[in-house]
Amino acid sequence: MISADAYLHFVDKALDGMLRTVVDLGDTIANERLELDQTNTPYAIVNHCIGVIEFWAGHKVAGRPSDRDRNAEFLASGSNADLVERVRVTREQLAVDVAAAQFDQPCVGQDRPDTSNIPEGCTQGGALVHVLEELTQHRGQLEVTADVLKVKGGQLA
Image (cartoon, rainbow, N blue to C red; front, side, top):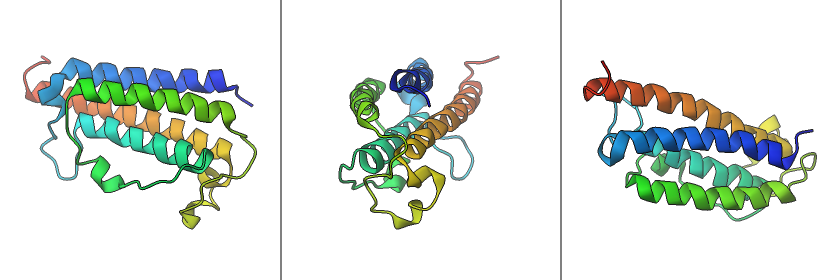
């Protein structure tokens, strides 16, 4: 089993990479979409990852109530400074939640019965692995999105 510190190390690597990408883009480009249907802005991708952490670690693992609006996560926009601060606060809470997690025990929050019979929702450890899965997946999506936006804006040659 992985230690809480080791787990948070991998989470931090993903979040650090995402924040580096959006900050490097600047506020304007971080809030732009690709010229394809159903794409997300870099800002929205990171915002969604905050929602993932708050739902899967905060609700499923720690048992806090959830009023998550997943669709709204992808419509969000704002400044990178605000996003960096929100990630900082989310990380602090995640560290508390991971330290208290009982990886082999059932998830505490069960407001979505459809998730209680899948590996992501059966145990607290499964929910936390899912957080890491989502962060690494969206970090890759963010990097590709940023590269295309940079080309569009003439930043990459």
